[in-house]
Image (cartoon, rainbow, N blue to C red; front, side, top):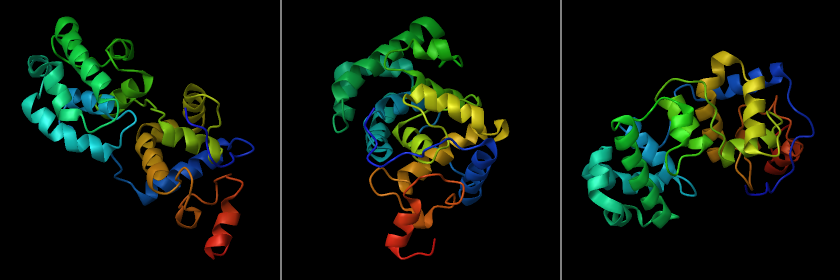
Length: 231
């Protein structure tokens, strides 16, 4: 986990503040969804595995050709490690990812009749699939209120006070505790996109943050004043 470059909130939000924060994000971006291109559970699973230490945009560029050649586990196995690697060599960790995509495809065929399981333990037993990847698949494809904590959500949880924690699991538990249950599932996308485009790692754009008021980031007023906006 990379170190955050700016200070975190000094305390955690209350549940009421958390609801206000999430509601503000929801109203500003009600139709938020994954920026990865996928057509089914298998393509989503592979895309999320490939997205580790890579941007969604870069992943979408390579999966267009990959999924055209290998739209299902059987076709992916037939393509083989070198065939997979040839499609994805422009993204980070491509060699290890090619091995994992081949292995997880073999596992899906051997253990699940080629179908992506709707079960956390079964998902996390697949090659290259950790808790975050499993949470994305459970959330997006199977409708579970799973919270996948990536670097953006980890940063937001700490910086804003929404869910402070030293580990991704601690932040995940804090989010589940504070975000209202009826808002938990879509919050995954609201938070990722907010962290990606507004509450950036080194240069948060507080002047255009729709959740400025409930946010507990200690430097938010200074950043606003530096931009020339009224606090």
